[in-house]
Every structure is written in structure tokens, then in C-alpha cells.
Length: 403
Image (tube, rainbow, N blue to C red):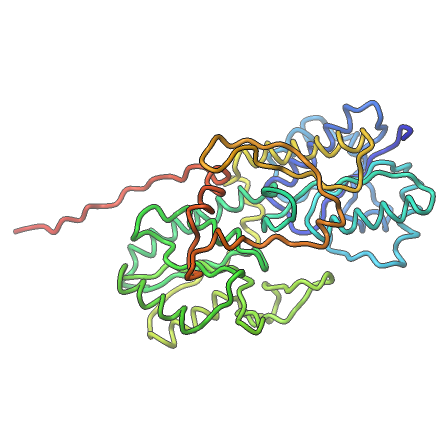
């Protein structure tokens, strides 16, 4: 392909490291002799439709370097679902700015957008290569060991449950239970990461509720009663997308976004944690609390994992490397080189955009305990090198004093 310009976009919810991926693409593009100018979409594909592209090549070097540790989505994000009538206008803009290399950082829906846009452009005489850079805290992208953003969000969950668990333990004479709700839609990767905080038999979390397992009221309340009897309080972690056997969300949310995804945090809905709180209060008459962090795990750079920032940047660079060697229609993947419990290392690979767009990756059965309320050692082996070591806090021996 002849020398052309680059267009980069960010789409969907952010992660703590999505801007590090952006920095990786910019760095790779500005150091390639096959690339001219580097543009960014202002607010995703909406920036293309509204003729608002950002000249990233004119940004100060310190700003571009600073992206590597900056949370949020620096270009601005969007959840606009492209319709057939949008494509002629998109193509006109691609031709206007001589875009030949097209990169987007996002999840399943984003990969579908890249696939559709590049397919339309090439079928209409505008040669263009598109490569996807993986992003989602949900960790549910098909074909990759994990996604940039997941390790930092997983650490956020683990630290939150660890520290809130200490609070719950010490306040058990006031509140008999605590429920932490994690984002993640229909995947349990994030709530499962709370298990990293479980360092001894009595430490939280005591019960995990993962979307991969249907919610059964009776079994749940029995598990709550048993945990309370054993520990004196109960720490529960639930995924926002847990459902009953008939598919009804425990959250009772009925709102969907433009891609058909249930919006668990939508106005008018009731969170899964709130519903569980009500169930426990009605059944046992206990006082308790719930914690719904919503988007905080997606932007908390202060709890970010260095490994995550580095891998996100490298994924961006790898995308440019693929595109400038003529490889398009793919998403960058990370593949774990060694078996669990050995040194953690990854290699880069690819998977077709169409395959990513049409599949989700739930937690495998081998990662979930038989009762559905916990995770196996296999999952802990998988997630531990991503989350990193957690702090160790002191616990009083609490020997009863004698007169």
C-alpha cells in the first residue's frame, strides 16, 4: 500500500490503560516511514461523521508521553451503532483525509465496527487496512488470554473486597453482611478476581455469584446462613449480570443500549446488590450494606498494574506493526507462553475481527467450583500474575485479658 494517513478511535467504556494503547499506536505510527499524518476520532465514530478529527501529530511530546499513565478515554468515546446509511458519509471522510490505516481500541462491538468500515471502504475502491486493539475490563474478548484493562480492574476489585472485608469483619456487631457488586455484564472474570483477597479460611469473600451460573434463591440463602454461622458475618461479591434460570436479571433491569446489551446501571433499574440486600434482610432480619462501584474500576489509574500499562502500550505498537506489513482485518491478541505457576510471559498473535465480534468468552467451567459460589485454584493460577501481590494487613490476636 502507498503511504497514507492513520485514523485512531476509542470506543465503549474506558479502562485505566486504554490511553496507554492509544500512546502505543501513536508512537508506532509516528515512527513508521509508511505513515504520513496521525489523526484521532473525537468521540469515536461520531467524530468521523461530524468531521471532527484531532491532529495527534501536533500534540506536545509531553502530552503524548503522559497518555501512558492517564485514565479515561483521551479522544472521547462513543457507543453509536453504525447503520447502513452512515457508511457513505464515513467513506467520504476517509477519502478526504486519505486514511489508509484504521485502528480502534475497544471490545466486541468495536471490532465489528472496524470490520464493517474497512470492508465497505475496500469494496468501494478505497484501499484501507484495519486492525483492532483489544480493550475491556470485562475480559470477555474471544481469542486472547486476557485484555488490557482487565488486570488493573481486577486488582481494583480484589483490593476493594480485601479492605471492605476487614471493615465488615470489624463491624460485624453492627452490619451482619456486605455485598460488593462488580461490573462485567454476562462474564464473571471481574467478580471472580475478588478471590485474590481470600487469603485464609475466614477472610472475605465468602460467597461469589458469577453470571456463568444461574442464581438460585434457596441455595444462596443457605450459603449465606452457613457463612454467617462460620464467620459471624458474610462477605458476598456478585456480578452485575447474574440471572435467574429463566434469564431474568436479578437486577430487574430491562433497559438495553443500542447494541442490545442490558444496561445494569440504567436509571429506574435496581442493582443486583440491592436485590440481594433485600432478600437477606427479608429472610434473616439482619442489617447490612451494599457497595456498587459502577465505572470506578474502569478509571482508577492509582490502582493500575504496571504490567497492564506496559501490555496496553505494546498492543498499540503491535497493531501498527501488523498494519504496515499488510496484515489487516484482525485484532491483536496476547497468548500466555508458559503453563500456570511458571514464569509469566506473553507472545502476540491475531484473530479475525469477525470472529471476535461474534463471540464472547465466559469463564470456563474449570475455573468455577462445583457449588458455583467460588473459584478453583486453576483460576487463581491464571489471575494472580495479572493482579500482582496484595498488601498484608495486621490482625489482632485478641487474647482475652485476665484480671
